Image (tube, rainbow, N blue to C red; front, side, top):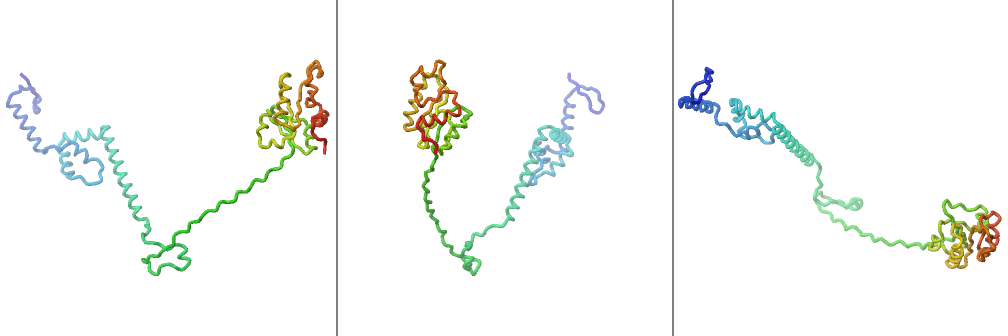
Length: 282
């Protein structure tokens, strides 16, 4: 047999049909006193910030005051993370609404352009403004300007001095005696790392002399001299060749007038240019 504790005396008593009936009557009486509980979602929404007024909010607030069950559920929800997040989201929606309304009011106060035609500046300057504010004024269509292509100036060919191309690896130091000899003839010296840079240049017609000084095996010098003369016909070709230990007379091509024995002294550049075919000093 089950037992139930009495709320008045605190003693345990056996559960009977009459005791259950009395409990039902007390619960029904308490429910009748506080009224039927509204949906808990409506009660929660009443405590969130809104833009429009909510219908029946006062009645639900009075019910929460006299109903401990609804009051407990509301307070527990407000203190939970779900209730706090819902409250923050509601506040952001209200703030966004008020911001939009403020911007709309500001936009409405800005001056608007009238849809009526306005006289052009030329018409106002010429005294053609309309006598009445609502009278339409015809404006002439804008004049389309045609652009006349500019005359292309023909490039005047630049006159370059006679150039001596000095093949030398970086940093490209040119002997002073060679600079002086070329300058006295009204020419200029240009240094390159390889002669291949010169043959395809647009100013190759101004090249008067080529000087080969890059290190090469002794057997490649005859072909390098022959190739330079073939690709630059009519130009002066000089080759600074290190002399072998057995003397220049041992190889026939070393007696070529284009060959200058290394190391070259300052006094050797002037005779070498004359011997290779460049004119003497002016």
